[in-house]
Length: 108
Length: 171
Image 1 (cartoon, each protein chain N blue to C red):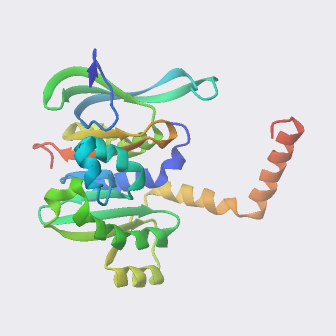
Image 2: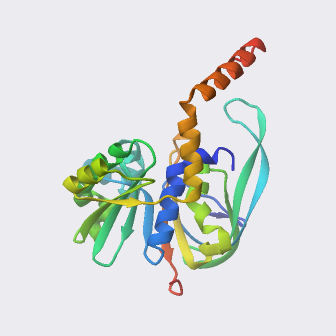
Image 3: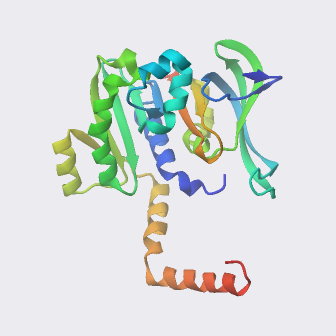
C-alpha cells in the first residue's frame, strides 16, 4: 500500500515492486517492548513500479531476515533485473516474509 | 546490518538461487500444506492463508522451472534435519493452495549445504534428494566461529567475560 511516497507492507498483502536504487542508512528507534532508544540499520529501496503501476516511492526494511534475502542482489544493483513480490505475515519477532523473485523480460 | 551472521542460511539460499537459478522465478519462505476449507469459506482465501501461517511448515525456497518445481532447503548445521524434511515437504505440495498451478510439474528436491560426506550422499540418494554444495568464502568464517565455540580457549574466554559481567552486576 503506498502511503504518500512510502510503500507499507500490510499483513498478508503481497506487494510487487521493482527497485531502481538502494542505500543503507540508520534510523533512531524506540524499542516497543523495552522503551529503550536505539539505532537500527535500514535498507531502503527506490521503487519505480508497484503492482504494475508506475510510482516514485521508497520502501525500506529493518528486518535482518529480509536483508539476508536481498543482500545478494545489492552488488551491481542486480535487483534492477527483477521484480520482487514481498508478503509480510505476523508481527514482532514472529514476522515472516515470503519473497518472490521474478526476472524481468530483459534479464538473462 | 547488525548480527548478520544470524541469517546465515537465509543468505546462503538467496545467493544460491541467484547463482544457479537467476533466470527463473523463485520464492523464499514458502508455506506448505492444506488450509482448512471451512476457514477459507468463512474467512476468505487470503485471510485463511494468513491465519494458517503459524501452523504450516515452510520450505526455504522453491524454483519454478518450465517442467519442474524445485524444493530447496539450505543447511549449515543440522544438515540431516534439512534432508529429512524435504521428502515430507514434497508430500505437501499437492495440497498447497498457493502452488495449485504447479501441481502437474515434477518435483526436484535439493539440499544446499556447505560441505558433504559419503554418509550424507548415501542418505540423500535413498531419499531422492540432490545434495548441492555451496561454500562461498564467507561461510568458512561462520563455520570457524562455530567450531571455535567448542574449543577450550573460547570457553575459558567466555567464562572470563561472564565473570566480569557478573562482577559489574550485568548478569
